[in-house]
Image 1 (tube, rainbow, N blue to C red):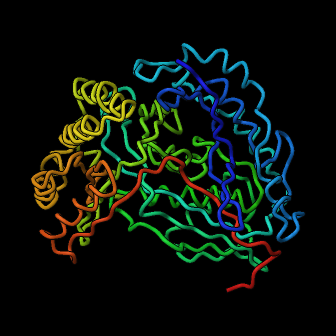
Image 2 (cartoon, rainbow, N blue to C red):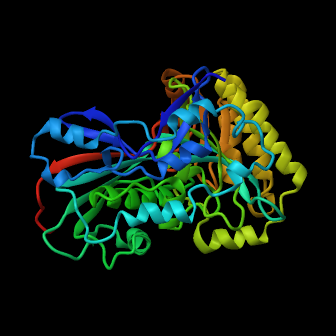
Length: 459
């Protein structure tokens, strides 16, 4: 494998208008330069424990000193400069580590390299008083499509599975300074518990004085992972707002209480792309990542959602899992084989038909594990009929995301997606069926500094 070091650090600057947009990323990886496949590596992961909101390793950034309107200072204060130590040795030792297609137990992946020592080191740098940025923060996070779980019940790793991040519908969250405490939240019923968890994880007495507003959000409980994306955006946004060290995916999960079943949305929040995760052991805060791959840019997802339905969540979801029969080892191996032998190779070779057909087959087989609860591979008669309608119109890669009701299909291009959307709309009631075209998201969430001032007026 021809390898190149790829750093998923806390900040990746991108010019947007007069400001700077920062992709969230916290882990380092080895990328196969011929295929774009990303492998997480042990040594490079350890280097990521030292990542902070810095311009060079070990140098804290104080954005309060940046003069308003001073582009050069702001830019220099947020670029991550030199490579962390261990990078050169990681490049030399990259061969023979976590293999993409190896689903056998791997100590490198089964161990929590972001364990207590790494967490203590990260959190120790955030003690004392909050050092809040003078700027308001906007966080944009993608939505998550989940193609299905590997297993649940029985012994060994639980859940696991595969999914992809899409750019629309996006979550947009804004954090603005307030003159005085307490924190103000536009939707406390959706935010308060996560903020309280973040304050406790960061060992703070109280939350910072700020206003948090949701400017845009996918509907909750429709299979797009909006609850996880909101929780992670709150934690990452508050860290950025307070000039604190960035959290890696495991820490994000621990700080927000997310990732207890699926880890696709947590890894997807950080790095986007197609995500395959192995499933979680009982003593792991987050399932290990098997691989992350970018999807071809021309491909599109068609998102089809009955507007009057919601999927399972919370206590109802927990009750459903307890009632479901365990997935057999043979079914689990068959699903893993579909991912290893068909889905991943199709992405590597940009084989659209191969990928779409494999995703449909995977989703149907994974959905059959929920048949006693759903009545079949899809959640109820209405979604089953909608899947049949979409396939009759020639759509490929049709599947159900999580518990639904969002269904998805794949298209080779924007033009093909629009044609499929128009054909489906011609046969559907627009008040009952909502249809979106979405682009694969290969960057994960982004943070943008949208304002430079010391404080804003309280609402």
